[in-house]
Amino acid sequence: MTEHTLAAPAVTRLLPKPGTLLVGLVVIGVAVVAASSAPRVLASLLTQSVIVAFLALGVGLLIRISGLVSFGHAAPFGLGAYGAAWALSPAAPIAPEIGLLLIAPAIGAAFFLIGLVVSRIEGIAFGMLTLALGQSVHVAANKFRTLSGGSDGLIVDVPRRLWGFRTEALQTASGMLIVAVAALMAVLLALAVFERTRAGRLAVAIRENEERVRFLGYRTRAPKAVVLALSAAIPALGGVLFTLYQGFVSPEILTWGFSGQALIMAILGGSVALWGPIAGALAFFVLREELGGLTSHWLAILGTTLIVVTVTWPTGLAGAFGALGRRLTGTVAKGDPA
Image (cartoon, rainbow, N blue to C red; front, side, top):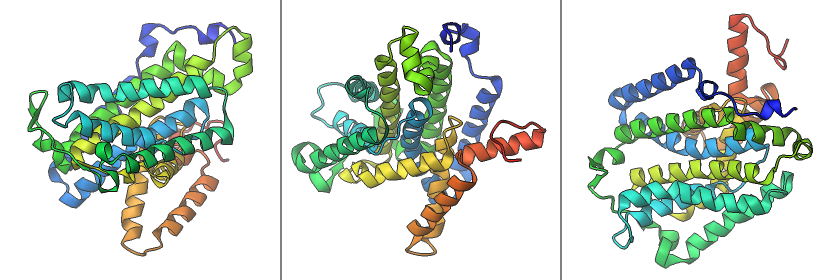
């Protein structure tokens, strides 16, 4: 690792490859087709999986860049959902359009400050800390009934228009699917650019050898806090979409079990590629839907599937697809099975 390796790349090198942009456009096109032609049940399942994919992506990003595992990332997702409910309430001090846009940055800023405090904590201690944070938010949502509605939740009265557009489409599976997929692709594009910036390269270097990075004269606390902030802002955006789609929020989306599901999605999809957790989220919802219709013990089968995938492909579905692609093109990467 040298000073040159962390230098800011040229602007042209920050842009994702044309193939990445093409894949994003194809995914959005597929979402439009699915939204217009898929059965209502399938469209609803896809919409839910894409919204929860924001949470899985946040967990996967933290693993990918910082090497940290979170057991409490349902907290920023739930805070984003409740924040949207409060922003849409008649008592909100600002216009709902402004309030909705401020939710994800505000939650990201809060987790940046948290990251500055806990930047030296790693491993299982970090995981337990995130679990405690998530559970504290869950308990608060149950206790402060005047703000959260307690265990009964909040019914959200979504305005008929936001930013000049009718909101009826956002509360249908077909309409929200298109919006959610477009937002998810925009987030992926932004993350791909971030990873190529000096800040992204520095964050990866810190994951590999933080002591050496400090020896080279770089400060490591702020970059680690930035990654934590990004990993929280992305689920917060998913929480906003969740409220706009469901029109209802309850503490159920703040439980440790929901955080655990997001972690399973991230592990199942793998973090070797940015899109890995998204693939894991889609696979998780499909498995849950199919297995749930066969047996009430679907969790046991899902757990066994997760073990098999983890042992067979330690890098998850993203690694498996990558290895398959390299085999088809005649190239072999380090770590591929012989």
